[in-house]
Length: 133
Image (cartoon, rainbow, N blue to C red):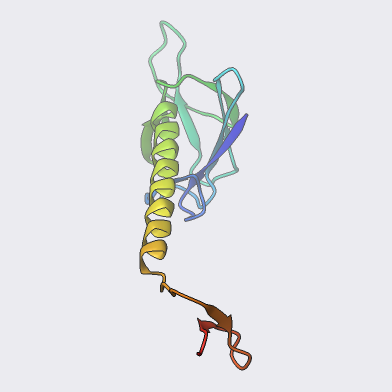
């Protein structure tokens, strides 16, 4: 099971720049069997779903919490999306974070000073320096 936080916060799993979306607007729990459970986190502008009742004019209904389909139309504040788009954005963000971390490690390894030959710790500074002959 995995929980994704959706909101304007830079610490959210899915960051949305829409001002109608709260800092911590909603959460999606991806269950072990792949179902999506959406919970509104008491946001002022709300989380909405289209009324799926057949034969009834489709209109937006508030959603406090419940299972949603990946392709079901949702509205977080004034932002229109689907649960599938939100989970895909979280996956893309996680992949980007891994790529950034790999690039950072590569840069650090490349730019690290290389000392060849015998080295010792300088007693005054604690740095590793070339051993003096």
